[in-house]
Amino acid sequence: MNKTSIHERPLVTIMMNENIAKGLSDPHRLKILDLLYHRNLSTRNLFDLLKKAKYDIAMTTLRHHISILKKNGLISIQRKEEVKGILVKYYKSNVKMLVYENYPFVTFARDNKEIINSLYPKFYKVMKKIITNEKDLISVILSDVKSRCKICRTYHYAEFLLFMVLNMVIAKVLRKLLKTVLSSPTP
Image 1 (cartoon, rainbow, N blue to C red):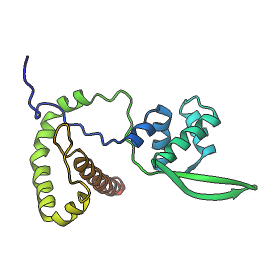
Image 2: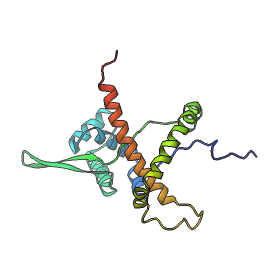
Image 3: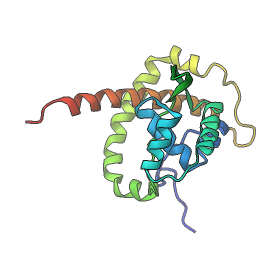
Image 4: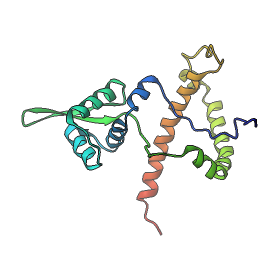
């Protein structure tokens, strides 16, 4: 049996907790999150867009999915308005979902190993500098993480929190960069 070092395995981090896992456990909810990330929508708007995307769903089922997403903190009500005497709620996503069917993580990592390896030292230097220079900020993030996992002696929750913060920062930077790149005229 060959030993595989940790550096030979694809490093794909999926940040998860029980609430997120519950919310993401259905393909309809994944699509709802994707639709709500791009704009605020009412239940009727969601129903119409899901039908257009060939998702066979009843309105009562959609309401059930919305309830689960709200309960688990993945969506929230952005605004309410009265339309013809009926209160209409518009929902927004609290998370950015990158959803692709049958996404081959292992194949992607293998096929892009050269790019990943060339970017790694650059990211390492930047991340090391940030963590070194922002010790106070990092200690605030990790302030309620005092103990290691009793089973494997690692800091799962600390790692989860740091990934969450870094993921949010990177997503914000990428959105801004993409807007800049996509809005600039090409030569």
